[in-house]
Image 1 (tube, rainbow, N blue to C red):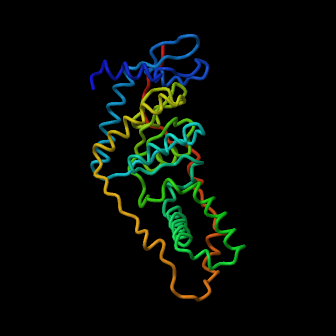
Image 2 (cartoon, rainbow, N blue to C red):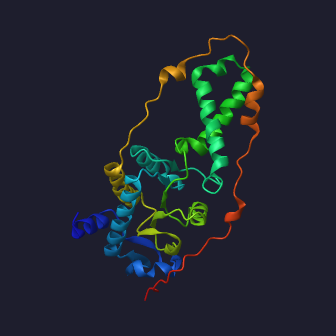
Image 3 (cartoon, rainbow, N blue to C red):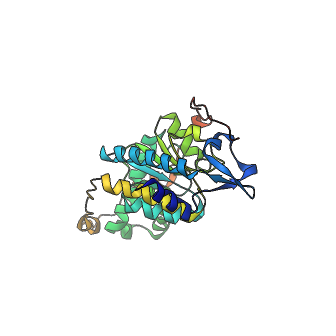
Length: 281
């Protein structure tokens, strides 16, 4: 895509609109073109250049078979990010960040496996053999777990990269990724800190139109480079009921109802990357 074309499209999608000047981060100064009516205007030439860098990096990760975790917990963006992540078969987190997802992955993976196990038991009809009170409790637990784990149910290992909308909002994800040196690609507005992001894409990270435009470009790169081979769901296995009429062992459900998520408390301080940034004049 020609530079003039992408800049025109960035402009049409409102990517250039930053925050009010009183809410800016001086470290974003090098990406700011100017100010209009107390709103910073982002330099779209620099956005285009950074977007190209991010695309090349994403292409490399996906070509190597790596997973990219989409992260955006802003209420008005949840549905959009979930839809786009699913469209390219990538994991996503659109509800409250699960503490320790990266830094305590083995613990979280255990919880994900239990969520999958509960789903399988419900689909197989095993819940039908349980007391009604137990079923109510299990369904309540499933709804809670679904909120946290539905987007990462297929995540078998720590993702190779995070794609974040508004890293200032998703500070917990940024801290964990920085601690483990997991690269971050992020759409970042004029109030963010680009020094903690490996591939910052300066742009409007609030407006749905802007976020959709940038994210669809990222998704198109993933689709182009990924060799997505979906494992078909064995519906026969899921729907198959136990032939035995024995009463189910209720004790095996107790740990599913009583365990709590273990959050990593060691991510309170955000590591700083040694980079110098020009102040906006």
